[in-house]
Each structure stands twice: as structure tokens, then as C-alpha cells.
Length: 297
Image 1 (cartoon, rainbow, N blue to C red):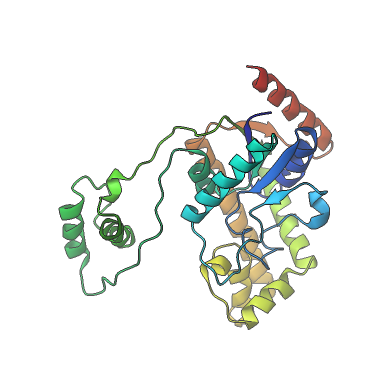
Image 2: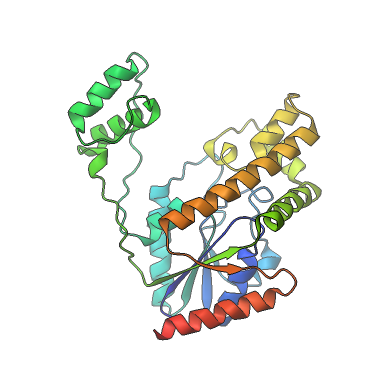
């Protein structure tokens, strides 16, 4: 199949399992599309695929950076496109799996990303002054004058790239022949799965994984972005009980899943399939049937 297959959906719906089954049947290789799974040592909280789960299927862009290193969507775009080309050139099927929508879109669509510019210090300027500076450089900006963080980013972008942020090329043009597959389930079942998964993470050693990072005093973006570590740091600091921290992980995971659905539905044309938890093979067969039909059209 000379196409890129993308599997999206919230945690607990079976993305990893589906990707392995499709890779077996379609001569596939899997590309991670989760922004936190690129980092080594962040395993349990990120629900990273295990060696056993991989079943000897090649996996790419997992554990490629340390938590001290910076890794942006710009870097992912470069790495993922190179990986896709290599897999296609080897007559294999690239299967992109994950929930970081911006990574997926940056990889597959005709988006232009530059390296992140150096951040300047704007502490001496008021919001109104910064907004006036932005209007001088980017009269077409749609950024609200009270959104200071975005204004500062736009000013940095202009200084680094010598062009306004509003002119940045964003396109809905796909660079590859791509099929988007989404796994879903009812909200009630999804929330139950998320709550159970958090409990399983605790049982699997999430507390110990988080404590190791906490003791090393690592507070980089890689550590503070995923749900699971910063919540437990509050427990280690004595600000919350373990029960409160675990409850917060569940709550934030449920809210994140809801945002994921909204984002994907607004940004991409996803073919959604209901996960059959009682007989997952039925879900796999349904999707294989859809893919075979799609490949002939």
C-alpha cells in the first residue's frame, strides 16, 4: 500500500494495538506521533509502547532525545518526513500513530516551520506598547492586544525571519497520499478506560518513575508537558495527597481526551471507527476492509 496511514484517538482506545495489527498485514513500519514519547525515560505516564508490544515491528522516533534536550515541532517535521520517505522507498507502509495533532499536521501537510527564534525580554514594555510594535511589523495580525504571550512570540518571529507571523505559510495541502483512521468509543466508556489506565500506571511504577525525575530536579518542557509527572511532583512537595494527585491526573487526562476529539474533528478529515473492546479483531477487520476499499479507489 503506497499510502501513509495515520491512527489517532485519545488514550485507551487501542491505537497501539491497531497499529501493530495493521503493520503485520500491510508490511508497515510505525512512526511515533506523540510529542512526549520522543523522550527517553518517560515511559509509563506517556503510555509508551513496550518492546513486547512492538512484536518486532520497526518503530521510529521513539526514545530519540533525553529530557534535557529541546525538541520542537520543527524538528519533528524534519525527522518524520525523512522517515516517511525512507519507509516508502523501501516499499513499506508508514503508519503514524499518536495524539499530538500539530506534529501530525506539520509532518503531512504543506506547512513551513522554522527553527524557534531566540526569545527577547519584553518586561519593560506594556501590553499596549508591545501591540503597537506588532502592528508596525504585522498590520494584518489577528492576535488580540491582551494576548501578551502570542504578541511576544510574533515579535520574536519577525525579528528572526524578517517577515510577519501572519504571512507564515499554512496549508491544507497534503504532501502524501494519506488515510486518517480514528478510534473512538462512548464518553462513559472512554472516561472509565482513562481512569483505569491511570490506576494501572500507578501499579506499573509511575510513582517510582516520577520520583526518579523529581529527585534529579529535572523540570524541562519534556517533563512538565505530559500529564502524570507534574501532578505527582505536587505530592512529593507535600502540597497534595497521593489520592489528590492521582485524581488530578485522571481529571486532566479526561479533559485532554475531549480536546483531542475537538481538534482532530476541526483540523483533519478523520474516518472514525468504534473500538470493540470485547472483540478487537472485529475492529481490525473493519478497518482493513475500509483500507482495502480505499486503496482501490
